[in-house]
Amino acid sequence: MPKVAAWVSSLREAFGGAVIDDAIRRGRAGEPTFFASENGRTVGTPAPATTNAWIVDRAVADRHFCAGCDGSCVGTGQRCPAR
Image (tube, rainbow, N blue to C red):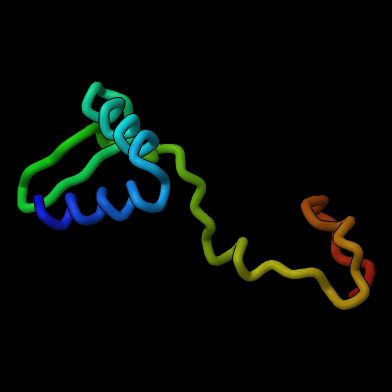
């Protein structure tokens, strides 16, 4: 795992060896603190799946306040008084 080793080395330089070594140790012991995979080999514990992740759809992304609106009408089902 040469790429992972180089990456871990750079993390040790940036954050200190004790912090990174602790994260790796805990990941190998079953905590989701460290996980790496390279060429079919893995080390550590992957993070749990994000089954309850919040996803923004197009309808939410396209919402905006009208010019001169204070936003008090948002979510009330009423039409914006500034329109």
